[in-house]
Length: 123
Image 1 (cartoon, rainbow, N blue to C red):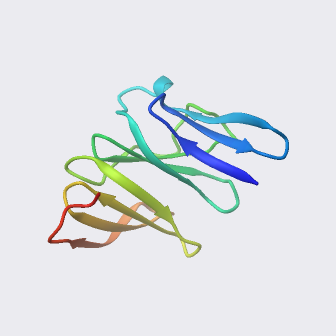
Image 2 (cartoon, rainbow, N blue to C red):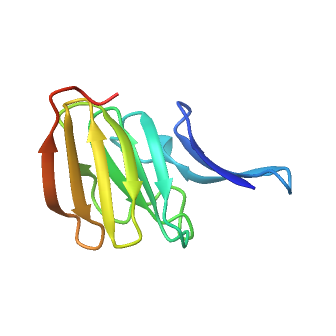
Image 3 (tube, rainbow, N blue to C red):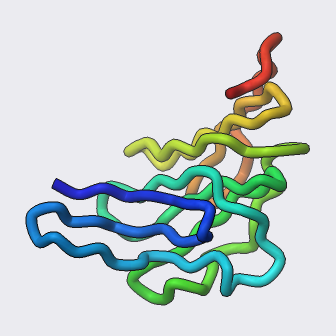
């Protein structure tokens, strides 16, 4: 009944179809030095949003605190576009980029845990 969306307008929204309303969870246009948002994921408990950007960076934001304040400095995850981010229940963050690399981070420390290269570029 809910949809989290990231768009070229730099907004991440939560749309509740039953209530027929949409609220802004994050406004990346108001966060300095960030490129276009390509994909976003929200933690199961709603405590943070992870977003991927055209410049290869990945950002974390707490939508409960502010729609414009990052939790930590952006992660330089990829050399070019970061197309996809995914959060697991065991504190892992996976990113996939146009550079053909998939990385896994510990979400609590943002330390890279693994990095693999594909022979084909990510979509």
